[in-house]
Image 1 (cartoon, rainbow, N blue to C red):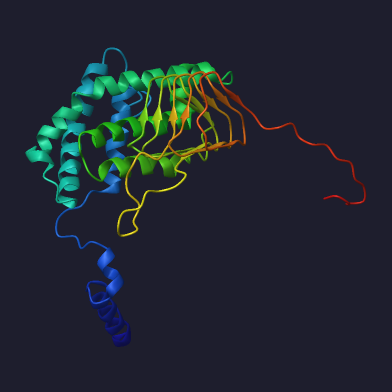
Image 2 (cartoon, rainbow, N blue to C red):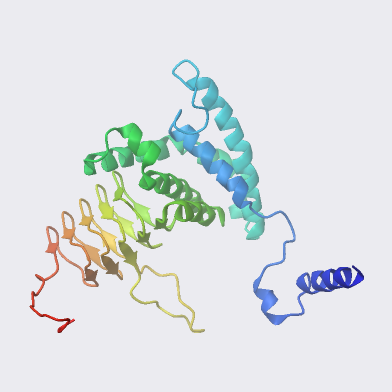
Length: 297
């Protein structure tokens, strides 16, 4: 037992010191940090506000909706204020002198617009999928809606200068759905993702209205601009998709290029050049060959 205790003590001492060079990359907690679990609770409250009855208390109805909404909003304010405060402290960012309570109230005033945008996403997903039987089914079942709820909340927080929280929020959705949307991307109204698994939308993407993506689509960077130390700079490096663009499954669009409005990018396309409006980008027709006994494989 004494050997066990001594081993534990020794390793506790090592793990809490800075005498290993590589440990310097892990910040030491000097104050409360954001909580992934608490932010998960926060997003559940957000979804209860955006979609009453679908998340949270199932017994909510027209007579009780305002009561429950008041309860949700009070809890949401307290929890968001707490997490914004820890996020600011984590980054040593005083956010232009605004307090966490001021920032929280400013965000709450944006909730109606976020709900409006999410409502357009519900319609876009429903209209684009004949397998969807109702708007309710879309809200309950479609991973795109969960990813978009997280993204639209995270994007607003990022635009307000809130550090850390936006990435945690979108990564929670990424883990749950396989849809990876950076909170810095700018996405318009009526956005839909069909199936969704493996979709990647980079930080500086600009996506217009009525755009639809299918599973496996990557909107990524082709290359990075490096600074004097050889580190990548945060410059616009992801695609621009104008209104009414459709990108089919497993296509990759890279770099700061523009896909013109009303264009269609077919499946399994590697696109690194801009295309004008009304373009149709498809693969060449498959070549058929004949062989027997395994020859030609």
